[in-house]
Length: 196
Image (tube, rainbow, N blue to C red; front, side):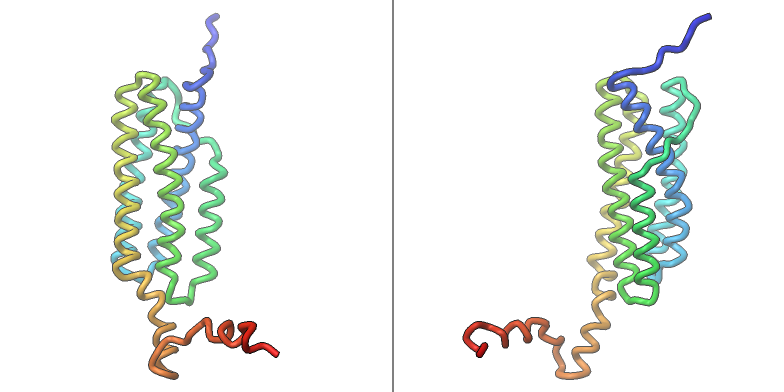
């Protein structure tokens, strides 16, 4: 009876990381739907839901990579994504009634995107080294989508969401003196020349 040889070295690492990302992407399907439901900005909602659709395709590609490996698609618990999603939940709770909620969710989502960009970048180079050309194509397509999602989130944050999160403070400052409060005023009074 022939026994299946277990992979070692880079092939073992590649399989391990494919399973890690498979788990992560499945978790993100639920998380993105939740974040879209909490978003105030219409474009941010659309960005989350649009990337959720891309994620469904990314899961299919990972299943294709499992096929290339001759393995059944199966995730391995990803502690990194668990931590990032726990942080995202905390951010949504802490900022639920705050004007900076959307900006905070972009921050949380970009942390996830950067994790995915780093992970898919590694998988592409491993697949190249292992001579898995079809896997390289699938993983590069996903890497491109992850980078695109990150760019889209940055543009949303910079164009409107960060400003919207700051607008209330400007309005509070304007109610008093017409200018935002100088946060360094107290420090200026306590210089050595004025103490004593």
